[in-house]
Image (cartoon, rainbow, N blue to C red; front, side, top):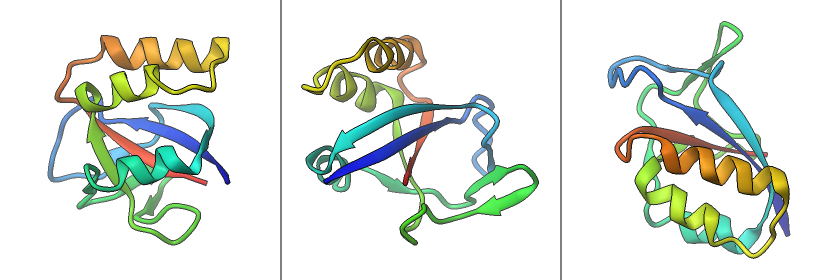
Length: 108
């Protein structure tokens, strides 16, 4: 089963506020095994994301939003077998971010 993944970036690093969803990139579709591989390392997002003035705390499937660090996510994105110019570009971008930056995994 393929699932669409949008990455929401915590540019400002404010732990006690919702992350602004204006800083996001669609990675595209990934295999369900990629989703499963991130579940053990993804952390619950305490305040959710603010998207067009609305607070979101769940993904499209009703699961709580989670996040991982850029340092953890970058090599996993780069190692995915489904390669396109877009996915390679997004993976390269994530690889340039500070390793401790939070990246929300918004599945749909």
